[in-house]
Image 1: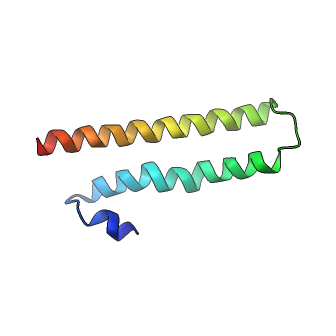
Image 2 (image 1 turned 180 degrees about the vertical axis):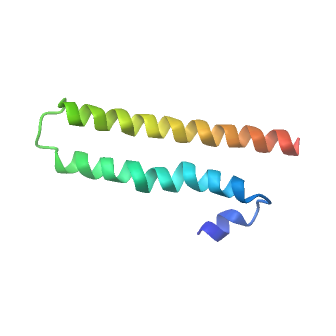
Image 3 (image 1 turned 120 degrees about the horizontal axis):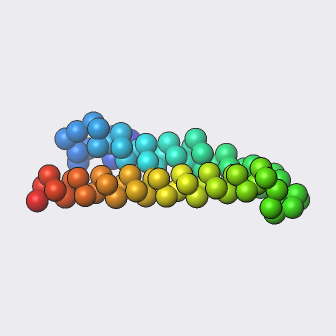
Length: 80
């Protein structure tokens, strides 16, 4: 899959940015947080640990979107 993403790009940095903002975030943060929340669903909704997990989840999602947006702007400016 990574090779398919890498084909249209000239720079390895571009590919690493895409994979880092998507795959790395999902495997390293989003899936473990989702698993934790699923395992702890019998606990009250607003415990300290759950609130922290929700905060990290939202923060990682926003960070990924910002990084992909910056990459898109950088690619547009280089080609335009």
